[in-house]
Image 1: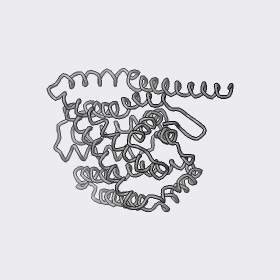
Image 2: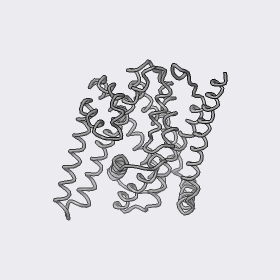
Image 3: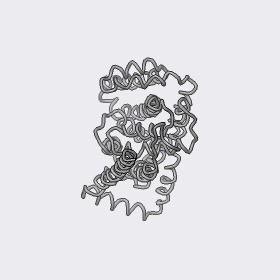
Image 4: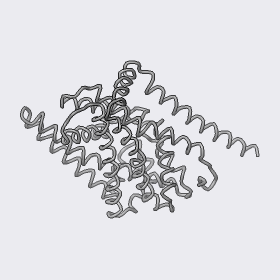
Length: 329
């Protein structure tokens, strides 16, 4: 009885710690940088009072679609381990989002989804989660390369043709390499085993070989669907904050921003908060846009898609129930 009571107490303590840490990091991210917060607050207030404020509502309504695509991906990925309903997949994604919010590079996302499984072999889900995240990366690389190509041709080709050509070749190489790895599980495992911090996880990656090309293609399409939702949300927020560009410039700027954010290593505890903002301000700065307007759109995107869902995910974290065989539904 004492052992069981201690386990329940430690579990409750761990849950409360996650809640407290999440709320603290949210506070630190938004309210303790006076200059950024005050500037952003003013711009947001003006935007929400403008006739175009309906764009913010549309962006917010797209949040469930964003994570809905991810839930569908996880449902398909998890079927190799156990039967998962769409609702359970959605719940697992929300738990992973919250735990990922408070860990570098969203590593807590792995733990959150694994804890929601009942299978005794649930640690093999690490490989399934990795495939899902890699699919999202490939989608980002494909579209982002096209976006960066616009900037290379427009701003650098005339003055630096040699460097520009090298960058184009580099982008094509990255796209080809990521697609090759995605459709070749053995090569992907070999790459993972060559990365020292990930080498210990190789034994949990075997499940990646169980996904055939058709399944990978479906996962990639779902990743592109989720990417499209992200892209549309960012563009709507840019329009709301009075960033005026052509359709091609909007898409190229957002795609390039997501690309840079995805390939730059992050040590942030706040889901890469900062990397996206810096890259967005640089790329849209090349297009002659005010940085504060771009920053406001980017921070709002983070708030809507990461911060708010992470708070909602706390509810599911508190409802986690553990047993020796797995996690109760």
